[in-house]
Length: 496
Ligand code: NAI
Ligand code: MG
Image (cartoon, rainbow, N blue to C red; front, side):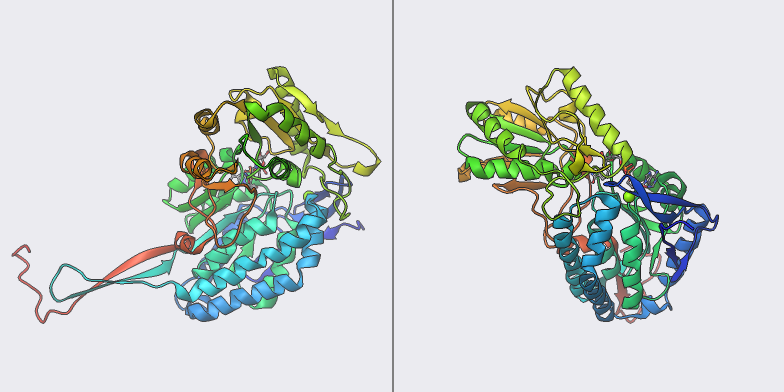
């Protein structure tokens, strides 16, 4: 008997294995050893989950019959359950993902706020009465759920990125099929115990685990799925968008970036150094919002870079389960190899390594997949290490002359997720905020997100927004009802 933890997935309120009986292993990135067994879902499982979700969302179902207030209360109860289990969930994320316990013990509590916020919003979505330009006519609008929503989640922050999709999808009255990443499915399956305890009707929330091609693709293609909410790479996002087009599905896409962190010579230097370090080295750089391009004004380039290296060099690598650790392992082997390849590429492109520059090995790193926090100078914005999302602890430093030059470099990229600006000049801050092509602009801060504030990309970084009041509409469709109050229907042969 293997001592690996065995998980099942949830279809129609039941804990099940894959219909094929096949499984795959999930690996702990610090020990490099498998620790859990996950069902390997396939098209048949996807069909069963979508059918269950579709039935659960039909008129006459228990879910559909709930008032928005009752639905909201249920979603808030899920938030309570999550809060109670947050420490255990944090540990699962650390084991499966290599994320730091220091970060996860905070994140797993904070993500409950999405369930409270959208639970509270469930009964505040109001239609309107239109003062229509026809006599004897009453015209009103209502917002209705879209139907079955597929939530396709990546591995970098599994439960947080799930909350961003699931909380508004449920608040809007939809039913859901979740497809977690094949690298980090365990926390979502743990989470389903809390969904079950909260008392959601069967079929409202389903999970199918497995690989992108075998489970993700049939889920996206299923004609009864009406919306796909996706976070991940832009390449996969583009494939999903194309597949969704065949059935005219709604989509929201959050697709990462290559965000510029821009430091002007009037910035508070100590604060800017801290912001730049956390922007790129937090979560080992495996975040969509990583500030992976540092634009530094030429007049302060050398002193700033020196201070930056000084702080970055103190980053403590090690066991993610230790609260002392500041940089953990990379989550999976393909990603580890990809990061190391980009480091070689940067060297070959002529950029200069001034910190790190390879794999990190040592007793503190266990058997884990660690990459040294790495800083390149002498980067030109046209280099691939400046243009492509690496998703690792690799910073590319590009000098600039003045505001116009900074804007030109910052915007000269296909992405537009976020941008940071470090300056003490309010005019400059607001000018930069207005000219940068990105969905989020941070002035004298970096990496701040909230359930209240809309988040999403310009350009190839995505479509639609997550979080904030307005975005619940991304999970709703509008219906317009016309009622004639005339006593007589007019002559059909006389056009009005
Ligand atoms: P991915 O974008 O391929 O996978 C994300 C999710 O989509 C996973 O659940 C996956 O199983 C699913 N998926 C894959 N192919 C699919 C398909 N054809 N139809 C439906 N679902 C599908 O990302 P992956 O392979 O985990 O990482 C590759 C690269 O993507 C990373 O090296 C990184 O650069 C980038 N990435 C960016 C993220 C971001 O938030 N910006 C998050 C994760 C990865
Ligand atoms: Mg894993």
